[in-house]
Length: 154
Image: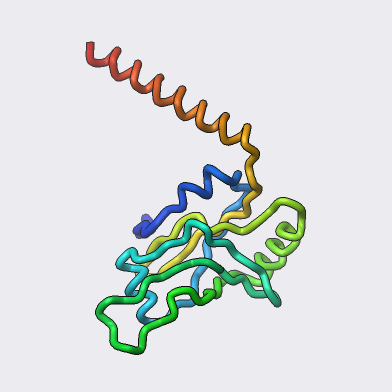
């Protein structure tokens, strides 16, 4: 049976600025109006990151806009949110993050069977020449695809 997965948002900048070593699927603790706002796509997480404190993983700088149809009892848009992972995964992530250069970056948010999930990547920052190589490779692939289409058409 195929998993039902609806992508809400993807962090394209993360894959450009970081090389992703490993990725983890996490649940996220949200309040009622936050869930409705996330399902509506009112999120911003370009500069967000994850932090491990006291054996718990937290996501910071993750902005969920207030839900427009709610009452005065709305959520705080910039509060830190807890991520749900198994204990052994958190221990493994803690060891990796303590190494030099590794950080936890949210890669995408999606719905899986109606539940909001986030993919967190164990990432290492890219140097400037690595980014240039990625741009060069993307341009070459685009040119090859263009030539291939020209060959098919005429």
